Amino acid sequence: MKAFVFPGQASQFEGMGKDLYENSSTARDMFEEANTILGYRISDIMFTGTAEQLKETRVTQPAVFLHSVITARLAGPRFKPDAVAGHSLGEFSALVAAHALGFEEGLNLVKVRAEAMQSACELEPSTMAAIIGLEDDVVIDICDKIDSVVIAANFNCPGQIVISGSISGVTQAIEDCKQAGARTAIQLAVGGAFHSPLMSPAKEALEDEINRVVMREPICPIYQNVDGLPHTDVQEIKSNLIAQLTAPVLWTQTMKNMIQNGVTEVVEVGGTGKVLRGFFARIDRRFPTETLTV
Image 1 (cartoon, rainbow, N blue to C red):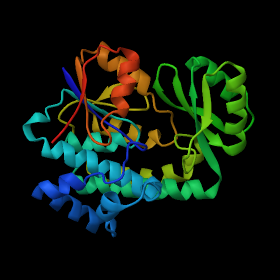
Image 2 (image 1 turned 180 degrees about the vertical axis):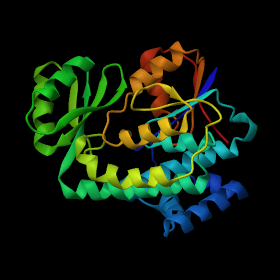
Image 3 (image 1 turned 90 degrees about the vertical axis):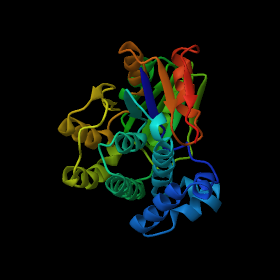
């Protein structure tokens, strides 16, 4: 069984998608359609923008989405998934690639999500931090004991968790994790506290859009972030997408469940093509992974 997985924020890079645009009329048409939908030329930022410009949430999310979805489209018959999954934002890319959402509908949702998250970040100063070298339960316990808002937000792979919350909460958790023996505990250069309760204002905005959108049953199960389990029921998928914004990303559990359920090979679609493959290597270095190239 082959699963295709789609990365989220932090997988962007300068010049992303330029080669696709230059070598494929299909890619050109999709990029130009995206420029119209978004109301600005995101293709120009992706192809010639700086790393700083690409890091802005309202740009990063549609940029990564476009790169992944267009790559999957250009793969043609080589894109034959038995399952799909996406890390955070990547869940929207996965749903479009698996025909649960149309390209325009998916991009519109990503646009709303990115703008709502950017607005939520501006309401209250917040941040995230990477914690490496501690067991999941230890990090969760440390966060639970802090009075300020801070939670374990991204369970990326064994020994690597990203925490998210208020500036004071994350700062305290960093110190407590270091005291507990973390190999690395460092604040990340992000715009805000993604996948934490501080994203509640963005969740409300996105919920209306998700409830309105027409979604079809995907061509294969999608493993979703909120529970790490495969889903095909449209209402379940929508509910999980809404919950995802303020809930932890259970990527470690997703990977383990995929393997346990018979997935024998994983293909990463979009971004640098290495982020999620690296997480799978932390589960099992011998597990077959590759990057989809077109």
